[in-house]
Length: 181
Image 1 (cartoon, one colour):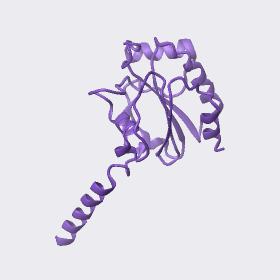
Image 2: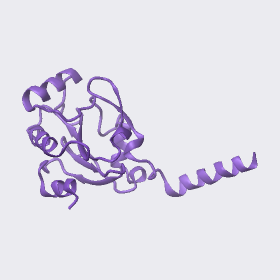
Image 3: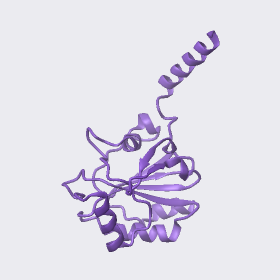
Image 4: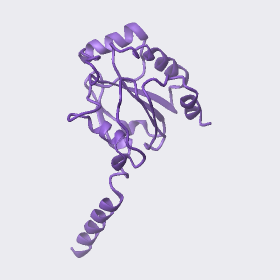
């Protein structure tokens, strides 16, 4: 009994000293755009580009670049996950079904799209709390400033970097990261 209490105490002290940074991308479960549960742990071993999307934004044509990136590099070592969000001037007003139809008919999107979430504010999704808080991700604080902000996750589920919304999917820094250069 004393050893269990000691172990619990050590774990609590470790958590307070080291914060939540031991949590990884793989610890989250999200919902696909079709409403199915999706464990991010299923992506272990892959680099992941996480992007918040919107259908009625000046940056919406980035879907084309994201799909081209996915077509070229997607597979066993890399994927893209899109998270539709309506946080910026109501630029993603549609339902999940409408968003999916828009993405497929206008841009041929084949990379995984998740259910619409909030990426900032009081109702921020748990994954985006992790992505934007150094206390949780152990790397950096950031704020999602607009649609199409990109987060780079390594093969071990760690946040590596964040790219601004205006950074195009084929930016040399993103390509070098995917290719391991």
